[in-house]
Length: 131
Image 1 (tube, rainbow, N blue to C red):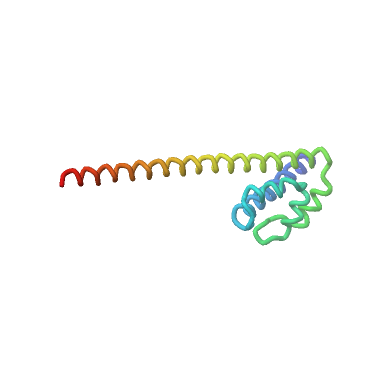
Image 2: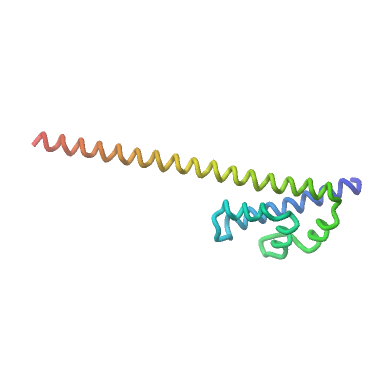
């Protein structure tokens, strides 16, 4: 493995650490709505987010990772930052789809409940007619 490949692999390892930590933070720790949490993280640079999460007990991001990010060539840093942003965008899309599915489920449940209540009224009316 050449030096360039080693640097690229390490950069992507750090990216993976950051995206995992952001996902965990937004889904399990933050008190903010998940979408808002992701949007806040998306508004910051990859380095800023890594710095924020550095040393956090659930994050594997350390000072060495921060220094490594600082020293990356601009083109590689921009490449992994773009991957970071795409990850956040994908998570926001997933959350949107989940919200749409949940809305559809709620609408269907409301319809089912209404239909069940109507059937119950029909059976009540039938019972009254038989008397």
